[in-house]
Length: 406
Image (cartoon, rainbow, N blue to C red; front, side):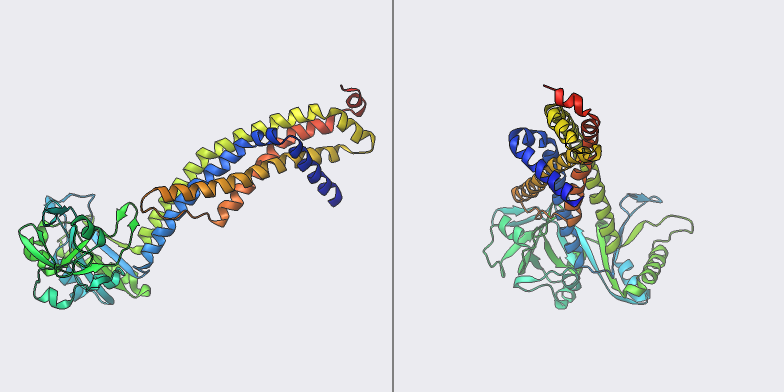
């Protein structure tokens, strides 16, 4: 049996080589289908890998607290978090390792330097944020506690802000204007690149207390808190934070929260679910070309059966059984699909790399092992499915009539 299978493979490869151009055109649908699937999967999985890497810096013990922006107004009032909420959480929540605020000031004012302008969102933060967010200065320093106490007019910027404002390579000590206020640059952050279409180097940080002195917190609804706690107590800490904020916001029993408390893992899982759906949908769409390719292979194999009728008759006259003939043609169809799958796999991987490199700041394409096995498995399945009919037709041929066939 093993000899028969090996001989069938040899015969299939010989037949494909003898009709190389026809074999290539026949398997073109398989090649395009597999290449398309691998391209889509490599780009989406590359993006997912980048997302996972970004969330690793937050860790599994992080909570992100923010207003529920789906409710722009709640019981006739604006939805926002305040400095009072921050103080209440710090005072009343047990088991909380740290909590740090981040307030976004309007980008309408922008930053200016010698006639150059950057529309970056200026964020008021506390020094703990740089540790929580794994963000450190490449030149100068990050914000420190003394900046908060003194409500200092100091700023730490990302590299894109430096480029937009045409600041020197080492901008430490330069002054930039934000609204009516002047800020001294004390640090330039390390380059972090792009994440989900957002340039992570397009940032500017000032002390949280300074941001509040410029614009009251109630006028800046876009404030979030980053909190850290023991992973085993994360749910308990979340419940405490919810109770504290409901009390601070005077939310009546039975009424929904006007804020959201999400763990970094929850957000990561939500994004992973979205990318998974995208992979399945696009994979299903381009997978149609695999079915089209399978139909093309079935047609060519039926033609091949007709062309090799006398050969089939000779094989049967020499003792070949119907199962032997069927196995030979079935293996030929599978080999043809499998070769198309291998070519498509290489083409899809290369195409994914090229597209990822062409998009500015896009993450490198990644082809997971499961996608390779899925593509090759699907190709083999198509060969079996659409090779059965031609193989069965060849096996049913009458040996006498086959030998008479011209």
